[in-house]
Image (cartoon, rainbow, N blue to C red; front, side, top):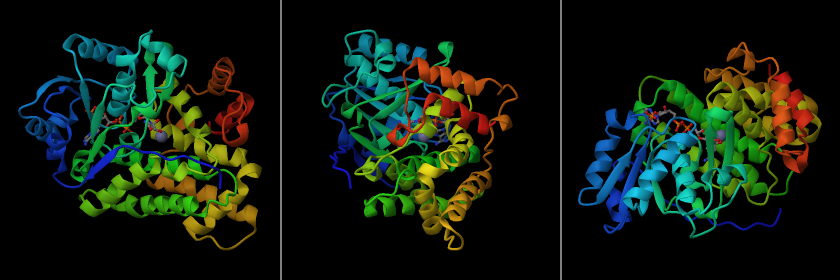
Amino acid sequence: MLNFEFKNPTKIIFGKGEIAKISKEIPKTEKILVLYGGGSIKTNGVYDQVKAALDGYNWEEFSGIPANPEYEVLIEALKVIKEKGITYMLAVGGGSVIDGVKFLSAAAKYKGEPWDILANGIRTEEGEGLPFASVLTMPATGSEMNSGSVVSRRATKQKLAMGGPGLFPQFSILDPEVIRSIPKKQIANGIADAYTHVLEQYMTVKTSATLQDRFAESILQTLQEVAPTMLKEEFNYDAAANFMWSCTMALNGLIQKGVTSDWAVHMMGHELTAQFGIDHARTLAVIAPSHYRYNFEAKKEKLAQYAERVWNITEGSLEEKANQGINKMEEFFHTLGIQTRLSDYTSEYKGTAEKIEKAFLDRKWLGLGERGIVKPEDARKIVEMAY
Ligand code: NZQ
Ligand code: ZN
């Protein structure tokens, strides 16, 4: 097992009716900005619960943070923060709203040009950001309990990551009841995103970190188990609760400790969102199978372990099991109603692979993935395989 440090300061408040506890967590002296997305919270009752919990507080609101949070919109929110002297932010939404708020937390205290935070990957250290918390409305990204964020700039077709230990939410409220109003397409996205988060931290090299492997495998199996129930019309609270907690646990740092991680699938996927606006989770389902087929030699031991332990494949050689593991993974995405080829999403796919190779070269991303095995020309070949 590799050496590691682990600190996750986010307090999780989990369960039915817990949104009311906002008032126990935020001091009455704070000047709060509540930030949300396109309005789903206005129709599903979440806004009313937040409003009731904030009774007696001094608060303002900012709406309209879009999916794949847009830099230009966030800059508008930054003006509000400065003009109104905001001291605390409350993100009410999915990964996009929470990520947007993380960027604002960093930008509110940053002296230079806000874009530098993304362009130059400036980290926000402990105690540096503007304090914030979240009410999660969409399980998927794990943003509610991690310190990473991804922001898009449509004008330049860029989607860039940022973060740092100063960007953990102070607390996050996870009420599985919010899942009732999520469209099935978004539920499928959430399952695929969380599933891929686990893969990125697991499907690398054989490790002696036995507990981390078992954690990862159990999250994958739980997601597989709840997926059919989550996609049914009828709402099932216990399935929703397990789905929600799996998504958080998939990317709160725990399973990544002491092991090597990959993240090349995400880096290539972000480029597809930036180019075509494809939902984040769907870009991952496009890239992942090709990524694992292309890097088969480097990853075959872990692929075979995945096939055996997660899918109970016991027959065949190591290579055969590893191959079956990739096939099972791809089938799983299909059972969610998620297509796994770029051409399923756009007819304009030709030339994408070359563009991604160039973008990675320009950014000097010369070796992504574990041990830097994905060079820009490998990314081109992987994306071509995914056409
Ligand atoms: O904007 P509203 O009207 O609220 O609608 C949203 C949005 O259109 C809707 N929604 C959310 N909760 C709902 C709901 N609709 C009905 N009922 C509810 N309870 O769902 C749509 C998608 O929301 P969004 O926040 O965009 O989804 P998600 O949570 O998947 O976030 C995706 C973003 O997170 C980034 C992605 O790249 C993408 O930009 N990621 C962030 C990560 C992190 N911070 O750790 C890691 C991930 O790998 C990912 O990159
Ligand atoms: Zn993701």
